[in-house]
Amino acid sequence: MIVTVASGKGGTGKTTVAVNLAVTAAEAIRATQLVIAPENPENFVELIDCDVEEPNAHLFVKPQNVVKQEISTMVPAVDMALCTLCEECEKICRFSAITMIAKKIMIFPEMCHSCKGCSMVCPTGAIKESSRVLGSLLTGQSSHGFNLTWGELRVGEAMSPPLIKQVKKTITCRSGRGNSISEDINNKLSIVDAPPGTSCPAVTTLRSSDFALLVAEETPFGLNDLALTVEALKKLGVPMGIVINRADSEQKGIIDDYAEKENIEIMQRVPFSREAAKICSKGLLLVNELPEMKQCFKELYLKIVSRITQNAKESKYKKTFTKTATSSSDNSIVGRS
Ligand code: SF4
Ligand code: SF4
Image 1 (cartoon, helix red, strand yellow):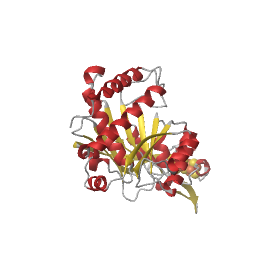
Image 2: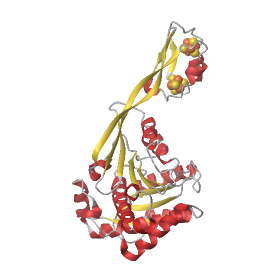
Image 3: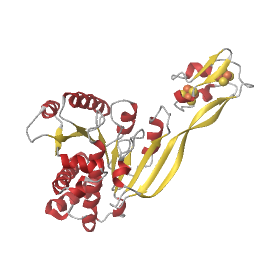
Image 4: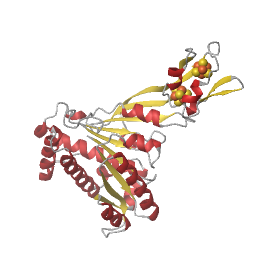
């Protein structure tokens, strides 16, 4: 099951929620492995950081044995000796990445989406494939019992979606909405940290998620950006819930009113505390440092489990998570460090 942690704006604490949720889920599954007995309990949870322009989950998770590989994408290269200047390539490119200027075919690699349309329509075979480096893909193991994968966009690279797609290809959970949930389950929980906003990078990340956890702050700006993300998710057809981060109190505020109007569940309120801010600024995990945060994320995890079981009633996955949740309710999880 792919749970994507998203937010309409940066700085809401999205990564804080993603990393602490991943640690909580991994602890839960380790504590209940005898109950659910997945094939490989150590790899039940994985964390994927798709915020490739500013990845920072690794600063909290501190993965070991990191493997890094360069990621490139296809861009066209024209052999002018074969080109007849027919302009068919320019006509098909909706991104204006290939055009004819002064009887010469020019290519703008940073605008190319690697669709290969130009090479397919070229009548003379003048367009060959070249490549452009997008950035890096990194994978490492955390000491909390899960793998972290993240992307780092090359400095100066304008387009992050192609790299995000490469990072998403590493998701080992195969129960995404692109597949049949009941047929393609492998008992995995993939927690994905999305880029902020509602533009192409965020939408590319959220597409095919089973559930979106929207991290919001109780300010007018926070509400505005949350509403934009909700509208995008409605179009994508992704179920969602809200986490209010740095909540001032238990009292209802503008996010609660909006959520009630939109019929979206408030899944948790992570309370504001100066101590929590200090812990995050040092790159430490809230669930390891503050008992009340451990409880807070445990409750959030169990609510997500409950929603997932609701959303996948007919699946084998439901059985797995139901057992986890039942065992967790007996206080048998999230007590180990
Ligand atoms: S590969 Fe696609 S996006 Fe790139 S130049 Fe050709 S037609 Fe345009
Ligand atoms: S489609 Fe091929 S032949 Fe026609 S202008 Fe483009 S590169 Fe030249």
